[in-house]
Length: 378
Image 1 (cartoon, one colour):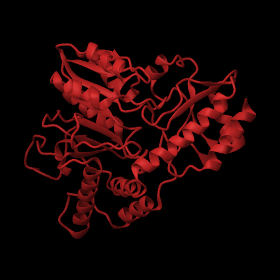
Image 2: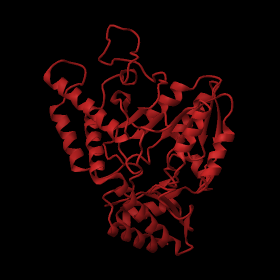
Image 3: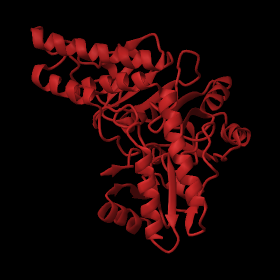
Image 4: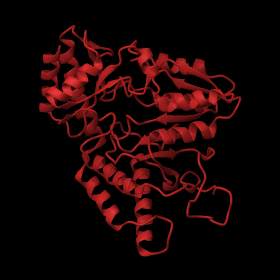
């Protein structure tokens, strides 16, 4: 199958990731839950994986890397751990339900929210919209690094620097950016970086991470056994134990570490440029006919990540995706992509879109096959 659904999860996974998962399955015990050789080995793998992420995003303290099940859990930890009744939060108009839904729940507990419009290709207007959305009660700003529907990047570093001028904490959803766009936290105003391990970091599903880049530590989302301070009824305060209750996904974390090493070996910028070339080629070919509906300006590496949404005039998006799969053996995703705010912003809330996202394994022939198939459908 020609797989262009990498925005949901990357496929295939690198051989090194598969090998690490297999090794962990065959050689691992519960990390931090015993002093025997297998348990100690598992703990070493977890710690080395933490160091791998810390080095990849350029932070000094591996302990500030918190392993989660996915990006959604990381976002929930921050949103629910920081915001209290009476607080105000600002989010962008492109946010995923992983941001929107926990905030909707907190609204019932006295948290207020303002949506700042993200203006395509105009970082100044976007920044001003965030500035105007801030008020004296704003405690947190949460924004996506890049839209999972339309590939539009937000000026996150400028937004976060603005927030710090007002003493406001910042949380960035990097699910569609980490592993494609270089992210360096060493000189960054991003306080909390939330990651999906199974997308462009090429780890297994069921992996994610929260990287804490501030001294302000939120409340824990869950409490339980951590393998440390077991005589204390209260949750440990130290990182990462504060946020890692229960048995970890040791197998997935081992695979994630290898996925990040794989990305490093290819070079993030190299991956970025290659995938953007494929998206640009697809965009320009689609642009040649008015029967294909495009929603954004032409892709640009300064303003976009390699994500493209489209529709075919007169054919619903689910039908297009089904035909691509059943007749042409091409995997895409159709629908609302769990991001209703983004679809409202681009007037596709009623129609949804067909989305394509390439990966490091995508080839020129894959894109040519997609173009041929879409031409046949239209």
